[in-house]
Image 1 (cartoon, rainbow, N blue to C red):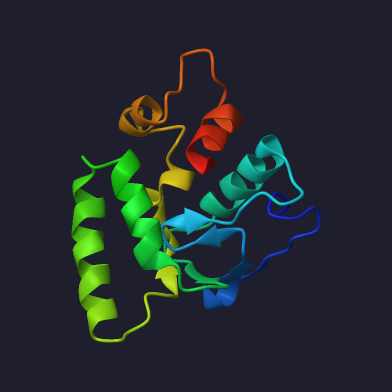
Image 2: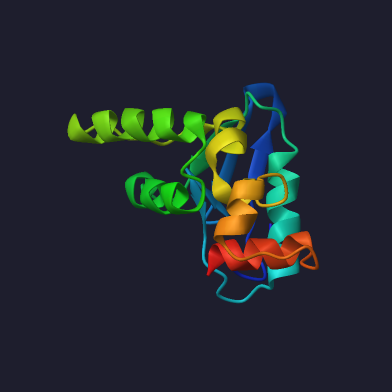
Length: 142
């Protein structure tokens, strides 16, 4: 799952419905591009997005609250995201972790998995009709 770094890896265990994704995908976010390219990272995220909705995603860091603020800035009209942000705030106020997360929830609320399908995100990041999906991802990532 290159993109964060050239050799970044993830482990998927289908029987356990579990993926360990490191810094490639976070709850409501994704890693920074240190060595990879936007097309490489977008391809990696699409491969992860293609896993079943009931896959439990274990990421490497608890960045969900700050990721939620950014997600709201690019897709404030997403009702599922609004609901999820309230749940995240409540969990964190109780000192509870927000990871792992379910991939199905990420597909509906994580802007880095939605740039090719959400017109609201495209508009809010300044994407044009000439932009391919990797370019839209890059505009979300910046």
